[in-house]
Length: 385
Image 1 (cartoon, one colour):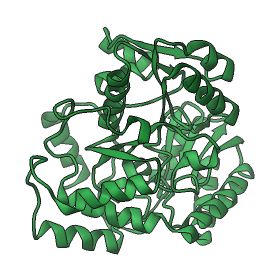
Image 2 (spheres, rainbow, N blue to C red):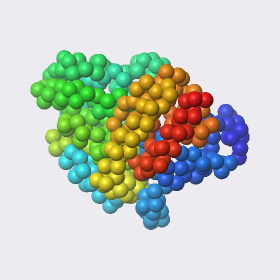
Image 3 (tube, rainbow, N blue to C red):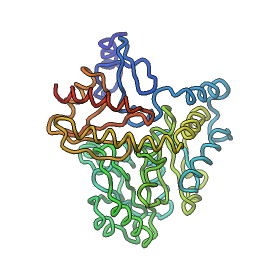
Image 4 (cartoon, one colour):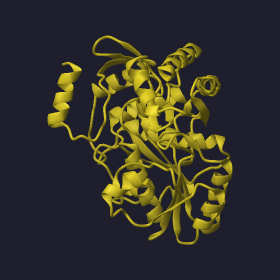
């Protein structure tokens, strides 16, 4: 089908919740995508930090093929080996507690909120402005952005939004607080890195009052910042964290990972999901996690992130660059949505705008120096266009 035919199908058959570009992608390999007309694109978005290992990594594909031909689904009423092994590996690589599987980042946020409320009944959850934790009702209520919340009021009560400063966090937490929920690096609002002082203040306040500190690593986890988990570079260890996006190597999976203190808070019947942790996606995630948890790869992410950030700062119309590893944004003095569109349609470079002047780049962790330099050339042309 042509793009125009797909657009007509969308107009008549699909709820209009997305603003799509007029491109149909049909194949991907590594950092490259191909559209239906055979044009090749350089992907510096990764499906919004999902295909961190590049498109169709051979080991992830093989894990899926092997599992899908043997067993696809049985439900969580029974055991499957991939889910149990994945939980063990996630726990050992991070907080040392236990794991609850789900199907997306928003569902991981929901599980984290329920965990916190189960641990301290009736307690408030403190969040900060600029956060994004998902679009389901609990996750949306923890996302203090007026444009996203207002059309769906009334929201779930019990959330308190404060400024992202150490003092505001310290003042907001008391004996009635169930949790402080933070993204170490805020992704959807434009790659805003929360300061070490803020995270330390949150840790101290939670320790003082017995609240849970929960990190949302849905976008910034799985190697994106140059360590397997973003918290590892902050010096602050949360009580629980949420992961998703890149965990499945391209397939949908999310998880709530706890430390030891919160490992046994949720009890049988408290929460559940029909599809969560199914054998196919768990097999994919096992392969993706093994590939990502590689010191050589993570070191390359840090080095290439520095190369990309330095290159971005030299480009026309770029005022500032922020982020960590290969999770970067640049602030422009021109329209970021227009630049992203020109980059895609004219230069065949996939990036996206998170605001009127903010351009976000989330390339595969497996890119090369040549890919970085090529992306900078294509982005220069889009900025000058």
